Length: 499
Image 1 (cartoon, rainbow, N blue to C red):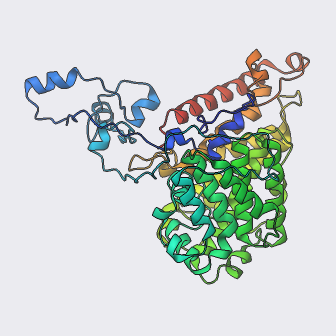
Image 2: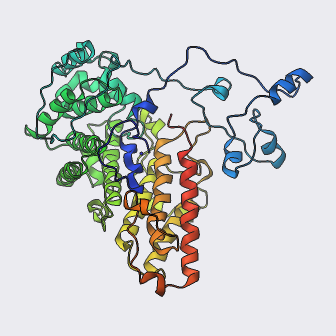
Image 3: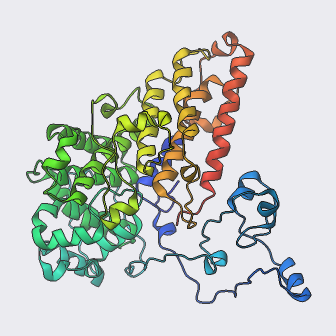
């Protein structure tokens, strides 16, 4: 989640739903490279002299504002508003560039990247199952230090900050934002000091993921420890175990062992249902009086729901298990509120579903819109993609949900780029999921010709030959337009930087 372009995958069957590879972001994209020498920025001003204006005109404008980019028109990249937006009265907004430029003018939050181990190509054992233990020696100082940190998982001396635990630092720097489920970094480290045993399994999996993001030379040693804690010992029946299993499934899926990833996610789903995570009372009963921990439990359930839907979409399954579960878990808050610990009163699914009847437009969290996108995907999967009938009331019902999702988006959620120019990863995934579901629903019912490449990369299987003779031209044209519109919007989303 698209995002995993840096690992060598052995399977070339990358379905359209494989944008779900967001589940483990590309460490090549995550670990930004900063050049030692950067070109001097040129500030645009209305009081420029003749030579300055001439110099500015010769510069290649590489950063267009979002309105100009979406309309595919030229942009002079003016600040604070480009000339075209100023003339047309549009709201001009830029997103951050990874190469500087407007970043030197627009304020930017720069997170210090975690320190990488010496540049050695990571080794991945795709053939070994999760039950196997690979005792590969760690012959570099970084791996030795990390191993020492794991041995003293609950020791305050070794866990008083993530600076002494670089795999965890990498996890929070490059993986946590698109998967904001476990406790925020500060609260996680405090709990590690006070009760490290409760986090033993989930911390081990987080270190394994951090070793992948940080390109550690021996990620298998981290994997071996996490596998041993998850599958060779008696795992406690609690929310932290659900988090550990889900993260393990995501990492396994990213490493292209999709069958095993599905098995692990089924274990996580079964455990979540056994302990009652699908009930709103679970968060309060097991939140230990902490609003942050209560919010973490809500996020755990809903991320499990979203991941289950993505796995089903990738496999073209008729449904996903959690879609039919009756749940009243409240909706997560905004990510900034979760990070800061200022948790507002949670909103409910009923409030979300009735938002169009409110006198005032209510803005829900990005996570809430992602959850709704996953629910709509479940409706589309239940219809199927190859019934040979383009005129189907069930298809119209599913499409109405897709239309309503976009129609009721508040202005602040219509673009996955925030006012500060950053990409909201959760909202990005929500938009991607909606557009991909449109293609899944309408592609088989359109008149677009199938290409031989779709035997390798496809969203839906080709329709039966008789379908082309029975449907009306008007119905095919409608579905064709919807597919092309969704594909165009996905292209725009993919043009955004990942950081």
